[in-house]
Structure formats: structure tokens, C-alpha cells
Length: 100
Image (cartoon, one colour):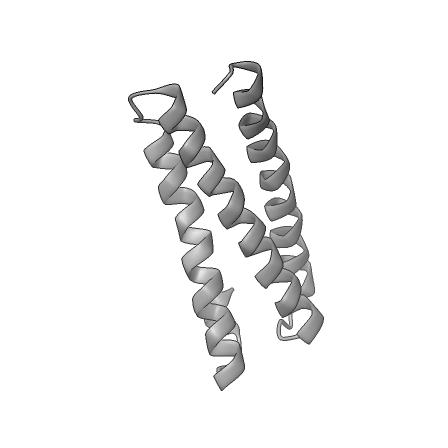
């Protein structure tokens, strides 16, 4: 979807920020699967949560600016980002139960 956005000075900043935050979610989730401790695991999940929140924000900015011609695709991405926020938030909240 990022490749289809019109390139302007402002949109380039948002495209770059979204690409960074969205790819960071995946990279940090992968790293969380190979951690050596629960503390390290929850740290990585916390990063995933922050990055997906940021990605969700940039997607909403793109939506509010009406930069996407296929709004259905954007709606799907916004919903998916919201679902991931809920999933990572639930996982991250378990650290309190485990006293981490």
C-alpha cells in the first residue's frame, strides 16, 4: 500500500515513519520468540505494542488525508493494527501477574 501513495514532502515523512514502525513490530516479535528470559520477552512485546500503536496512528493519518484510493484495503490495515494492539496489550499485561 505504501508504494501506491502519492509522493509529496509530507507524505514521504509519513510513509517512512509507517514503514519503520510496521517492520519494527515484526522484527521485535521475532526477537521475542528467541529471548532468554521472561523479562526480555516482555520487553520485546512492549516494544511491539509501542510500534503497533505508532503504526496505527500513521494509518489513521493516511486515512484522514484521504491519500488512498482503495479505502477498503486501508480499513483492513487499520483494523488489523487495532487487533494487534489488543493482542500485544493483553500479552504485555500478563507481566504483572508474573511479577516481572
